Structures are given as structure tokens and as C-alpha cells.
Length: 324
Ligand SMILES: Nc1ncnc2c1ncn2[C@@H]1O[C@H](COP(=O)(O)OP(=O)(O)O)[C@@H](O)[C@H]1O
Ligand SMILES: [Mg+2]
Image (cartoon, rainbow, N blue to C red; front, side):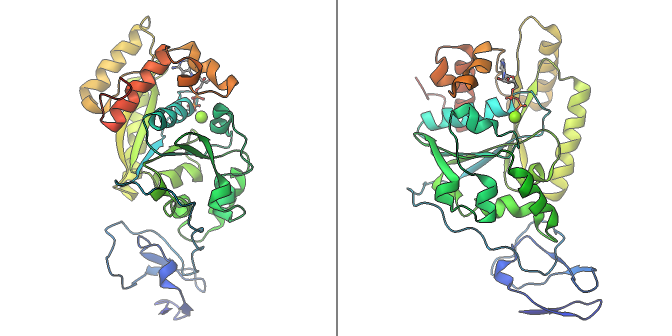
């Protein structure tokens, strides 16, 4: 369809089918001004306006490998919004592995340039998320099977290129990962996304894709004050995207000997009640397993770490009888 910029009257030929439904604003490539995009749609999206230009969006990647479709909607969980070294990657990998052991089909997506997730699973993919988005690899090569029921879309250094690609986009940059993953997710019951600490374009992208956030908070370092800042981060995301909800606060590095941790835990339980998961205890086995390319369930199935992550899987699935 042809749309005309109300400011400079330049006409643009756009393919409206390639504009994501939640994109409601366009930026004219002629005069640079923004204006509302009024594209007739069968089902108008309730999402808030996003800045956009009228250049065509990149085509979504080809559909993924054929797999048994799941009966329920795929759950998208982002392990995010916390500092480095609090157990995000340990949680992403072991939650994903635990869900897979429970018979769920899981895609683990690594959006950290360190590429730790594939290392922790002992696999060496030839590409991952970047290659999927750029089309260098088809989904069936970008996504590799790491275990029974567990697939991984790896991160790593090449994500720097993906960040640049996102930055260069005039509109919809924040939807890049969502556009790449949405066509594939039907093959999985869960998509678990690990993030890097802080606010890079990839983390923002994850927050525009996932609906549930799991936030590990280290009981060793977290204070009520630090938690306040963290709450502000969540509020700032929800201004843009209401669908993303803080679903799970996961206390990590629980050490019974540290009294401050206990006090902090009691405080957040008072505020968040059910959203606070049973803590993951400090367990040296959790830090040893990655060197062997093993999950905690493989490396030390009887350890506290394995028990705690099994509890987390029960909580997330809402199936208290799993693993019994
Ligand atoms: N509950 C735990 N007990 C002991 N060590 C842990 C625990 N959780 C994570 N670790 C270790 O702490 C370090 C940081 O964890 P990691 O998951 O990489 O954090 P993040 O992804 O948030 O940076 C890693 O060496 C990891 O093996
Ligand atoms: Mg990490």
C-alpha cells in the first residue's frame, strides 16, 4: 500500500504484511519526522505505540524443523534483570535441563556474548542466534539439540554483530529477536532466554519477546536498596510492554550462615509472597559442573543444587509431583 508522510507529503510504498502489528508509528525516510501508521488489520493489536519508519521490515526467518506441535501455548521465560554473577546462566541452563528431564520440549536461547550456555552443556554449535537472525544458517542448523527434549540457540561473540544490526535498524529494532523466535516457538513448550547483565540492545530485545521474567537475586550481595533499583527497571520496561511480568524472584547463593541474607529474604517474601521461589543454596557442585559440560542433574544428581533446581522446575510447571 502507498502511505503519504503528513509532514513532507513524500509517498512510500510499503508492504503492510511485513510491518509487525504492534508497530504503530512510522518515521519518514524523507523528512525524518514521525507520524502514526494506520494500517487496516483484521485484529488490531492492543500493544502500545512503537516508533517506526516505513522501510520494509526484514522478512522473518524460514520456519523451523518440523516437530510435534505442543498442545499448549509456548511459555517464554527470560532470566534477566539482574547483575552479573548472580546465577542467571546457571539458572537458565539448569531450569531448561530440568524442564527437559520433566518431558517438556525446551529451547534455551543464549543472548550473552560470553556464550556460556553452550559451554555449560558441553556443545559447540557452529552458529546460533546471530546466524538465525541474519539468515546465514537455517533454523535447523542454528538450533542444535543438546539433550533429549533440549535444544539450544547459542550466543557468543558473534552477538556483537547482531547488536550492530539492531542498532542500524530505523524501526522495530527492539523486535528483532521476537521476529526471529516467534515463528519457531511452536515446536517447544518452553523457551528459556538467558541474558547478559545490564541493558544492552539484546536484553531490551529479550524483554520485548518474553512474557515471564525470572530474576535471580543473590542473597550474598543483594540489599533492599539494590532491590529498589531493580524494581525501577521493571517499571520502566512495563511502560513499553505490559505483557512482560515479573513472575519469579529466585534467591540464589543461599548461605544459612549469613544472617543478612535471611533478613532480606523475609523482606522480599513479605512484598512478593508467592513470586519468591524457594532459594537456590550455595552449592559448590553448581560451580564445578560447567567444566565437565554437564548439567547439575548429570554431574551431581543428589546434590543440594540439583534438589533446588528440581524444586524450581516444580514451581515453574506448577506440577508438584515431578521427579518423584
Ligand atoms: N548456587 C550456587 N552456588 C555456588 N556457585 C554458584 C551458584 N550459582 C552459580 N554459581 C557459580 O557462580 C558463578 C556465576 O554464576 P553465573 O550463573 O555465571 O551468573 P551470571 O550468569 O548471573 O553471571 C559461576 O561460576 C557459577 O558456576
Ligand atoms: Mg551469565
